Image (cartoon, rainbow, N blue to C red; front, side, top):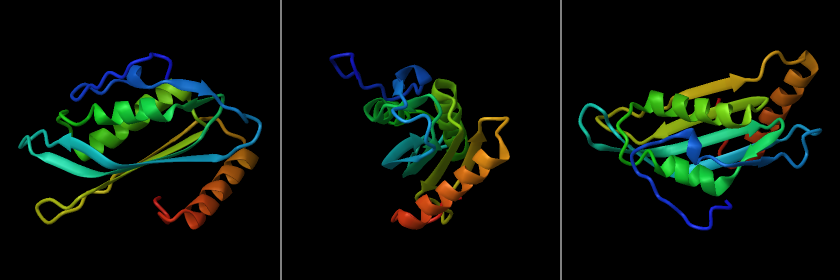
Length: 154
């Protein structure tokens, strides 16, 4: 965001690439949906490229992820060998490590290869969470899924 130049890394995903900013409305829970429709990584077994979409939805607490840095972070998987399940969980872990959101959902919708589409989903919660806030977040996500063109993803 403030670096002045863009450095593209294609093989070493690291949370250090993620930049954050203060949540402009921490007192009001709201869903932030981020869609990466051109995610690429390498199969660790064959070295073949895998393509898919990564959907990141979260309710922030004090911090939010800056979108350009997220793009650079996700691009860093391009030449990285990892299974789809690991990619999705690593993305979730790195985001949680940077912003500690109240709730995070990362869904990978990978293209069919060998006749099988793999669609891993992971969820992280900031615990403990009061039942009233948990219910409000569940309602927010239900509305978000209904209103977004993407439909439910978890």
